[in-house]
Length: 254
Image 1 (cartoon, one colour):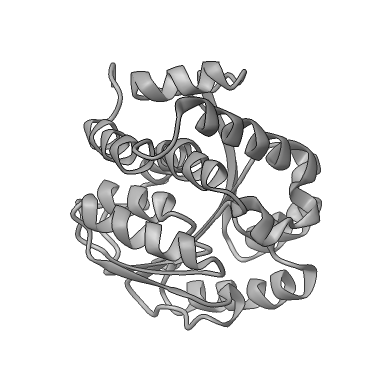
Image 2 (tube, helix red, strand yellow):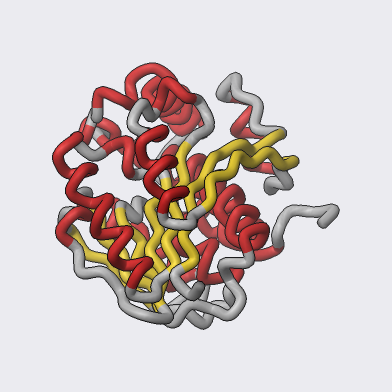
């Protein structure tokens, strides 16, 4: 692939129109810088609602991190073969703005129905807007990810950039439910940043997935991003010419 995914280019243009109408570029740039600091230095402290405590941060999350999460998730899903055959439905736990769930659904030919849950009402509304804009069927709602009903055979569960933000009891409660979903025939995919200090719980989850015939991977790929997104990246003093992530995957079909 020598150019950015056309779907991502089109969606990013729509995001710009949606979020830059009432904000100056500098406000969004500062929002990106603030979120970057949180991701790198404070994420383990579960900042919660403070992540979205201003229009600039909300726009930055939707316009910057959403497309990055989309691009990384799409590459991972395709590399794992998780889109073929398409899941009947995808449960996007901690869906945020819906980017990662959208990436899986688009990779699967837009055939899966998306169901999202997130603790932030703003993110829920943004996810539904994004899915509609991308031609995807789905609904999102406000709720707690560790309590959500899991799909059965033919479905998929996605936990992208979310598990580290849960408090330890909620994360501990969720793990056996993910294993049960896989045992019932669903694909289960967990994605997190690659930095070890961000997720000290990862080795335990990794060992558990591997005991259940799952796989653990680290990913690095060239970031083929829309030009305006690369401009925002540089303006914020960041460098996402390469996308990195790590994943855990259980293929419940086997």
